[in-house]
Image 1 (cartoon, rainbow, N blue to C red):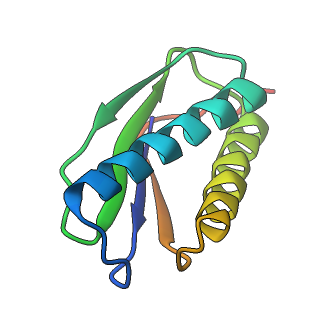
Image 2: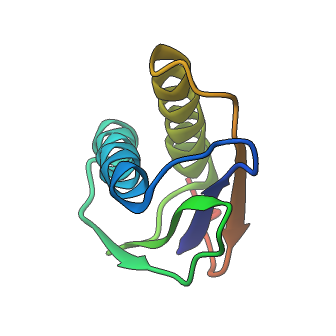
Length: 106
């Protein structure tokens, strides 16, 4: 499992705009998972603060090798940063909190 948070204090969006951006970014994260792991993934919303655009816990149904997790994380980073750039929004802070065991056996 990994908690993913995307935040920015400089973006002034109303609640509807934040929700649209959140759903867009969530879909990009799902694509990154599909490409990197080809595994099912559950996602649960986590409490957000005012500056947070997205805060979810992603839970893969089975453990994955460290390399696959790296690909997944890199894919999310790349997609989120590209999407924000294409929307002409400032860069955001993207943080990851790993909170379970990864499969270290390749």
